[in-house]
Amino acid sequence: MLSDELEALREVVRRVATTQIEPHAAAADSDASFPWASFEAYRDSGLVRAIYPEHLGGDGGGALAYAIVVEEVARVCGSASLFVLISRLGVTPIVKHGSEELARRIVPRVASGEWQASYCLSEPEAGSDVAAMSTRAVRDGDNFVLNGRKSWITNAGISDVYTVFAKTDVDAGSRGISAFAVAKDTPGFSIGKLESKMGMRGSPTGELLFDDAVVPADCLIGSEGQGFAYAMGALDTSRPIVGAQAVGIAQGALDIATRYVTERRQFGKRIADFQGLQFMLADMATQVEAARTLVYRACAMVDAGDAGVSKISSMAKLFASDVAMRVTTDAVQILGGAGYTTEFAVERMMRDAKVTQIYEGTNQIQRVVVARRLLDEIKP
Image (cartoon, rainbow, N blue to C red; front, side):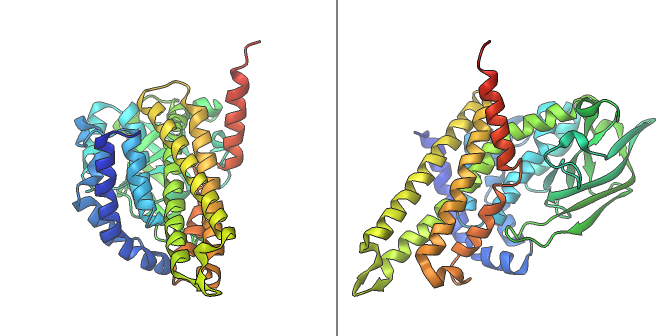
């Protein structure tokens, strides 16, 4: 069971999401436009502070609080849940490994909603194979000079600060990667192509271009050569949050389907009275609850600082995103022809759900992680 404090947080987030974010969800999707009205409502509600450390301007909520906020926003708008998720992920390496001066310069402005942040790891030829990245950072006196390209970056063009991973030693493989906080107005840094996507259309995804971009040395996050460890550590704590996002999307679709079957009539009675649909709903609800429980367990382990969180984090992301895809697809089926139209949100939710199986490590990669951790536990 969650604490009374976390349940109270859920009630507040649900109220804000339902009244001030949901009304903008369909337009953000159809127009492929960032839902600024939703972001401003989230910021002005004060909820933005909930998931940041107290000493950096937040309310000190941990991974469970983070999951609840993302879940409840995703329940009504997948795109809006990404601006909750990505800014916190973007500053995670700074919070955990950055200098105190760097953290105090950046994180309070993100925690207040004044700034947004992005996490910039992927490249055209370096998705699952992070160590294959080609973006370079070369020391030049009191600066680093960055050259290269990042791709599939959430919040591209919206964020004010970007946590960028680049190679400072090209011969050292994953041990040659470092992390940098890059301001949006950095000379030599620009936004490239924005993707036209199937889902999450209200959240921009695009390229970052670095052409002799000059980044001050004090924007190096932590130590040179530790970027790969920082990146993987951030993903271990963020993957359950993608799971929470998937749970929220699935719950939203289940809610719509459940209401619909009580209102739609065929053969002289509610379609809710047909056992075939009852069984579908029962399976959907069971899967959502199982996914939620696994996500919350992973988040509780993150909050406890459990060293074995990597396996459970991958399990949570893997299972919850697969559930979201099944449940949203079944919701469309339950609504029949109506579900295939934009009159109901389930078709948007089905499209939004798909990417939760892909980003922050595809579900095939999650299976690799789980299997490796499982086998590592077997003592020779």
